[in-house]
Length: 599
Image 1 (cartoon, helix red, strand yellow):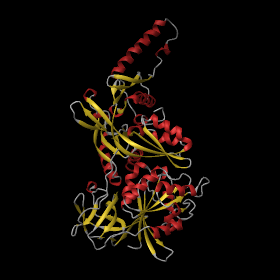
Image 2: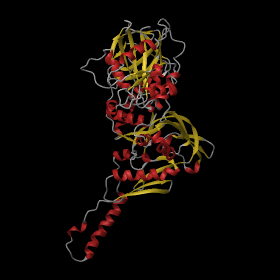
Image 3: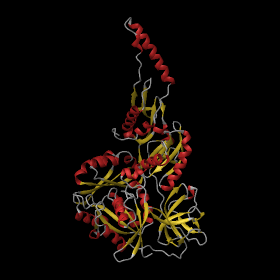
Image 4: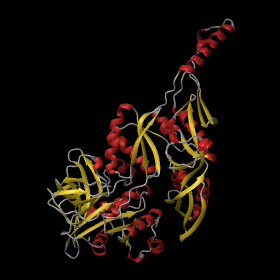
């Protein structure tokens, strides 16, 4: 165990975690030059395209240190975006130390601080690393000062590197060996192993990624999952190289994979503890917290016969992404689907994209919402996250919505624009902290519903990409929330209904109506699209009808001939409006969620 190091790389989004992981893998000779590509541990297409890490990934590296000893380095790559902090939390539980990467030009940002607190919660040893020193705007001394002030780590101990050019990688590897502690544990104690991730293999069933705390794991051993109390027999154990590498055992301190013939996905809970049936451990490994979804949206298959496929796809995806919560739902317009809970809007976007790419699903999404606490006139309190179940306004005594404490780090030049943005989104208790010369932290309390749609995008636009945003949940506070129905040709479309603060209801309803008017094709009769609160119409747009020129065959003659044909056409259109139905294409449901039209 003295020669094992279990560590992860944590940082704010886009500070170079994946590039540093690539360089460490290359420096340890774990990959041949002909198969190497950038973002080696980001195995999903969507990660490669967007340049972000979504899933944490583990790899075992062999490294010969300058002292002549051979070490086994277990690297667990982590995401940087605030929506995937649950993924980071699970990775940290499997580690003993972490590399804290900070961008040499941008310095310490919101998610850097949030990840630091997560790492300290699990009592990890941290090694600060200053990346991107090759950039013209790099200011290493200023960043050392920020590491000292904002993170409370010794800025002089930070290792300056350029992951892109491979500068300073050897120093990082030596620091991992010398400054990070070896794992603690007893190989002879009863087996205790943490499941920090899992995925589904079509041929082998569920593959568990584990960190063994105590004891040993061998093929043929009978194991028990302590949370679900299910027993299985181990078929195969091994290490995660660039693929599975079969081994004979996993002893205390090791990170690897376990295949135990698990076919039913609901038997597994990520964060569970594995133990031996013959000599079980007294208690599971502490510290695991289930994810709390904050954004809710309904997913419906394009055709009703794909419902079973959607069920299987969500089961497999939730195994690989335990932060995804879902339950059955139905809609009059769209049939059967699932009401899903997400950690944020990027999480929702990624889940939708993964379902489409990995499982070939065509989906319709409802507008995202948060969980409201509604007090009824009879004194009952109900939780509502779905507009379909919003009580009758006459029965509502009061509504409370979730508030967050938002922490925004910005260069001083953009302070005015950011303060204005916060006020637009109903922020209160605005305060400022000066972190370093030219850098500020703006702290405010605002409703979670306000940051769901366009807040993050607007912040990035206003600050030219230099603003960073992080938040933590606070409490529930009274608010004036209403349900807005969208009517197409006087018919309510329940999948388009949404809950919103009363003052913003008309603005959002107009946006929905305009986007739908652009997306729905013209019909042979006039189609009215309206937004309504109860029986009060608050917004409307019309889709003008397609009109055949019925007078084209009249070449002169009395005007009454033309008028007679036009009246006949008018009667036909009136009848068609009564019996005609409006087809709403899938793009229309997605279009209303776009925020580029004055949302």
